[in-house]
Amino acid sequence: MKILAVEDDPVAQLVLESALKSLGHEVVLAADGEAAWAALRDPAVRVVVSDWQLPRLDGCELCRRIREEREDYVCFILVTERVATGENLDAAFAAGVDEFLTKPIDTRELRLRLHVAERILGFTSELRRLEDFLPICGYCKKVRDDQKYWQAIESYMAARAGTRFSHGVYPECYERVLVPQLKKLGLATPPRLDE
Image (cartoon, rainbow, N blue to C red):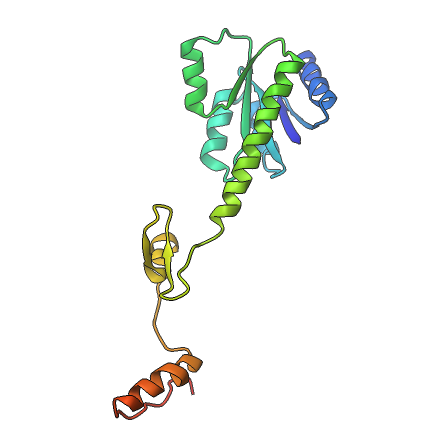
């Protein structure tokens, strides 16, 4: 995986980079939260291992920004010297942090957290792939939304994308369906508007 390691202390940054590389990951380094945010323009970076205390934008604020502004899911592991008290945990989880590690980093603990991150990213990718499918009835053309409610495709698209529709008749349907119905009723067949 391509992992963003965010650490302002040069020695701690070197240790973190070495640990991540020893686990077989590609590492992108940042020394503060703003530099980390800039590095996150790379969509291949889907995991962040970040110190809590950082200049310019701390770890929790970086995570909060990711949750608010990045569309794809990024796993966020917060590293801290702080004791993991209830208050600290609450602040970190409220910001959207997935995992917590304390310094000094234990490579085995880091490996476990990254294993969980890989699984989360796999599940989110699969979920996104499944969300790309839109169930549609082959007969009436109604679609099913996330709440398993069936509705006309026009209503669905209007609610999701603001799409407006004008209705007409497809030329083949006009000849195959509408003309025979009109003849059966003894009505004259109006000319097609698309001619």
